[in-house]
Length: 284
Image (cartoon, rainbow, N blue to C red; front, top):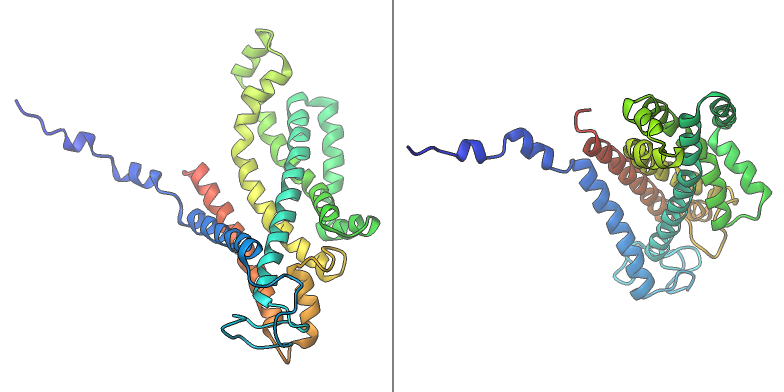
């Protein structure tokens, strides 16, 4: 007797949907990858230097300068792309630093509980009560402004966010039966955290990384606009807006281009975070 196996072997519509990547994740990844690739291309093969006058002052778009030049004749597109490289570098470094400091604090507080948890969370809650931009201004004003100062200052700002995020799942996992069984078997606390607790908090941490990077880009641009971030001659979107606003009437692109790039990068990271959330938690 012949049996038609096609309906059995064919994947269901639900299974096919689960295998698709969310559109927001794909869009965010493509935008970020394109911006990074263009910045690398300009660095390696670009016709113009980032601080090299290469045309007329405040020239409009042309075949030689696609979006024009700035107030001293530098190619505006080259500077915008390399400023994106700086912003992404600061955002990546600050986000990774925040995760490297915040995740262990949250794991220790959640797994140990008791007095250790209370003490660590009191410190975290105090830090969370201060607005991020105000704290960033304070930290950057104390030290010499620059890329590394920005990474350190912004990374410290977002450390409590990762600690608070990780602490909740760690508290939940420590009460599970398999953790109790591991303790009875004589498994050390560090091994339990690494094997059982950390994998259960990996998904929210990955999403938080993308969200934090988007916020870090905005904070970096704000500080650079105020003169407390990236310093000349290194380009920054915030610094470009500061330098170009006095020439807005003659050449609006001096402000429009860096602002558009900043908005695009923030939207791309937001899309990436949203898509990652959907991919890691398909039922939500």
